[in-house]
Image (cartoon, rainbow, N blue to C red):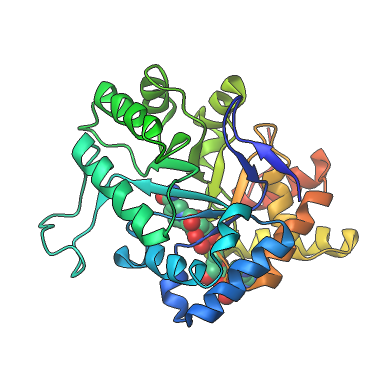
Length: 298
Ligand SMILES: NC(=O)c1ccc[n+]([C@@H]2O[C@H](COP(=O)([O-])OP(=O)(O)OC[C@H]3O[C@@H](n4cnc5c(N)ncnc54)[C@H](OP(=O)(O)O)[C@@H]3O)[C@@H](O)[C@H]2O)c1
């Protein structure tokens, strides 16, 4: 699978990224987790998306425990993590309120914990998880400089930022990505300037919940049923899986997004990878868009 430069001078990630949000819920042994990591890498899915808070602060440690069974794999992978949300959790008894924290102290302490949990000496990419009304862009930029200087984090980006929020931090420090939610069932970034900003700055977005967290295939909402029917029609015509068509719908966007796939099944990652060979034409792309909105384009 191709590796792509996330932004000019940014990290090279696999075009399909594996997401670790649900890892703790899979209730796997360390060996099973290692097999999943190896299965991803065998497909060319070498980039793994984490956050400190996943699995109520346990997912990074579960991944690191599996990686410790075959530490040389670290050389073949890129590790992405996030910081900036504080959850109320038995694993963080000091947290009283679910809130955001983008202070230098919280970012630096969290990165140190993520490195220890993932059993690595550096992150390839660190994202501010959500926009924080109390974020001081100058303080965050200085923190990024220190982390980069210390060799702890190589590149930086954000997640769920509006174009204005992205612009502010990007004016202080070059950001490599905005990780956003996008699928036929969540289309706001197609209309709110997010993708235009990515294209203008040559910053590729990372896409979370590319299959709407599975709802594309399980929801009985009318929009999901219409999209499913459109995906199935195109999949039959193209001889591919409906999930591949769903990923191809995202990959067709000129901002060149990187879908972050959340499945425990290697077959689902294979279907995502197959989408790289499936270029939808404008009519097919619009069939899915119209199915999602429920009306024809103007
Ligand atoms: N930045 C953020 O704020 C943010 C927020 C949420 C997530 N993320 C990242 O994005 C990643 C992906 O999110 P996601 O897990 O919601 O993505 P997703 O790929 O849209 O959804 C994955 C879920 O859909 C199910 N699924 C996949 N294919 C299916 C099919 N053909 N039929 C039925 N169900 C299917 C999977 O179940 P199986 O495992 O059984 O296949 C899994 O539960 C996360 O792991 C995380 O790294 C980031």
